[in-house]
Every structure is written in C-alpha cells, then in structure tokens.
Amino acid sequence: MNAKPHIAHVIDNARIVSTNPDDVFAETRELERILTQDGVARVFAHRFAGRLRYCHHTEGWYCLRGTHWQLDETDTAFEFVRVLAREVSEKGDAKDLKEIRKTAFASGVERFARSDQTLAVTSAKWDLNPYLLGTSKGTVDLKTGRLSSQSAR
Image 1: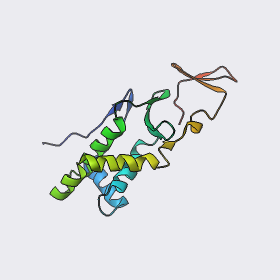
Image 2: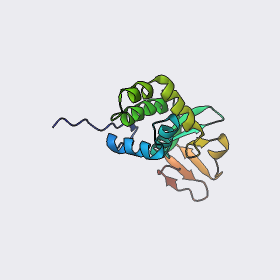
Image 3: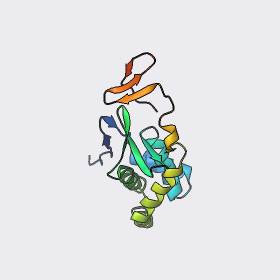
Image 4: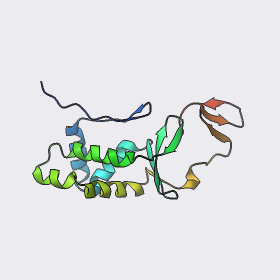
C-alpha cells in the first residue's frame, strides 16, 4: 500500500489535530459548495480554536505553549494555512490546485481567520482575572496559592 501520511504539526508538546485529507475536503465542501478563502478560513478556525489566537491590538498571532500564550514570530498560522490548503486541494482538479496553492489564497485565508470570533482577541481579553499570575511553571491563583499547570482558554 502506498498511502500518503496524514499531515501533523507540533506546537511544543501539544499535537495539532490532523485529519484524513478526504475528511478535510468533505468538511470544506460542506461549509462552502466551492472552495473559497472564507470556507477554508472557517475550517482553519474550527481546527485551531484554543491553540491559536490573533490579537488585534498587537496585530500578531499567538500560539498556546502548554501553560501560556506566546507571540508567534515565525508565521506559524500562515504555515498551518498552507498545510490546510494542501489538504483541501488533495482531491481537487488542476484549477483548484493552481488557485488554492497560491500565496494570495493563503494570505486571504489567514486574513479571514483573523476576524473569526473563535480566534480573535484584544489585549483586554488576556488578563480577565486579576488574581491569576502567569509563571513559567503554570498559573498561580493568588487567592489560594495553588499552582495550576493547565492552560487557560
């Protein structure tokens, strides 16, 4: 058998969920009857909710790094869009491949994703609880003194 491997990426220790290209293609087709930047952006937002955020005050993407959100300085979100575009175009015809695998298409998907409310934040959303203190080992609850290594969403 000559099956293609599923595409997966790793953000620190948190594995990004990857699905069978056929499932991704069907999901995109279900969202939009034709492959569009908006349709792929909706799949992207669904797939990376809770692991990527776009802050409109800093104009940057943030990745969840175990216990904290870290500014992405290597265009991780754009790379994930490229991977997703490859996945959704696996079963496409030559016209789909030509359009979907262009930088302009990926840029459009990434731009749509910035405003998706599952990914979009402002600086006001980062520190909602004044009694939580982020540290390199986790979050300390200043009321109880307890350290939590679970990531906040």
